[in-house]
Image (cartoon, rainbow, N blue to C red; front, side, top):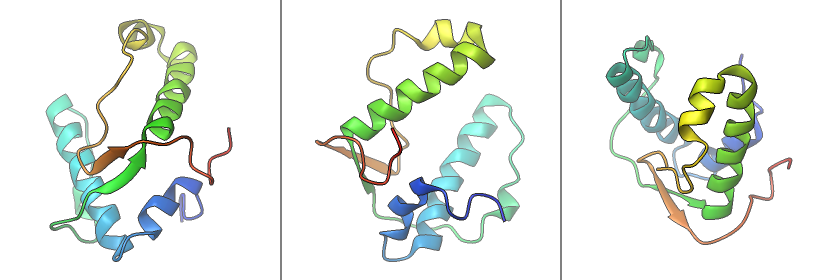
Amino acid sequence: RGYRFHPQLARFQACRDPVLAIGCYLDEVAKEADRRGYRFDAAKIAITGRCKKISVQRGQIEFEWRHLLRKLKQRNPDLHERNRALVSPRAHPGFSIVPGGIEDWERP
């Protein structure tokens, strides 16, 4: 169900234990949701634990940020305005930013 074939899942499928990698990613998403006062059902996370950081290319982070800003401009103009000047957003804590462009699996 859901996004089983989403191209970004490639970054997790490349890990030694993809289910653990996704669990670690979602665990951080759940913590952030809690800090922001959002509801996130962390009980659905299959497994968490210690994970090695996933390398993500700088160009991919920038591409995803621009994509998010385009969506926010339509869906939440106030949030877009507050974030549009941010040049280098923080990445997920489970990611290690490395030099490079957009991932091969991306559909720009």
